[in-house]
Image (cartoon, one colour):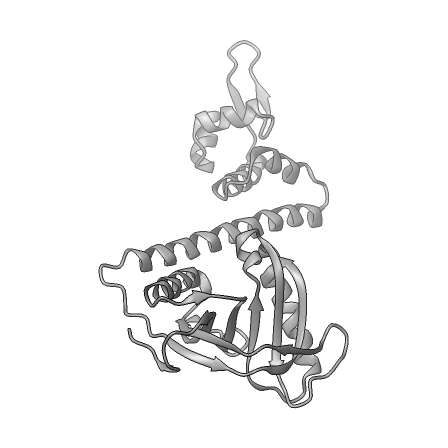
Length: 270
C-alpha cells in the first residue's frame, strides 16, 4: 500500500487534490485508518488517478469525470470524452476568431480598404435557399453547396451567397447559395432563381473567416463615409475558399453590399 504522500508523488496530484477527489467520491483510497484517518492507496489505482488528472487538465467537470470512470463500456467512455473534446475545440475556435479580430482592430495603422462600385445585371442561377439561423448557417451552407456541386455540371465563375439583413439582426433570416450555369437545373432542393440587378460596393476579405466581421465593419464605414445608402441582402462570392485549398491564407471572399450608387461605376476612392 502507498501512503497518500507517496501516491501524490507518483501521480503528480497534490495531497489536497487527492483529499478533494476522495470527498467527491471520485478517487477513494483503498483503506482509511479508522483511528488516524490516514489514507492509503494501492498501486493499481495509479492509472485511474492519471486519467482523472488528464481529464481535469481538459476542464472536464467532476460529474462528467465520475460518469467516465464508472462507465463499464469502453465505447461509452470514449464517447463521453469525445463530446467534451468537441466542446473544447468549438471554444478554441471561438477564441481564435476573437483573437484574430482583435489583432486587426488594434492595429495602429489599419490598411486602406479597396472598394469597387459594381453594377451587377439580373442573373438566373442554380440555387438552394431556406430560412436559417445564424448558428446553423455554416452547416446549412456546406450541405447546400454539396448538393449544388452534385447537380450543377458546368458552373461558371465562383459560387456565391445572398444573406438577408434579418440573419444578422435577429439571428434568423433567408439565405441563398448558388452557382452560375448556362442551364440551371431543378433537382432536389436545387432550382433556378433569378437574382435581381443590383449596385454593389465590393471589397475582398483576405484569409480565413475568423475576422471577416472586421472587413464587414470596414466596408460599412466606407459606405457611410461615401454617402451611400445600403439596400437589400448582402452578397458574398467565394473566389477561393476551403473547397479550393486547405491554406486559409489563400482564401479570398468578396463581400458586396447593395447600395444606392452616387458615384460612377469603377474604382472607388480609398
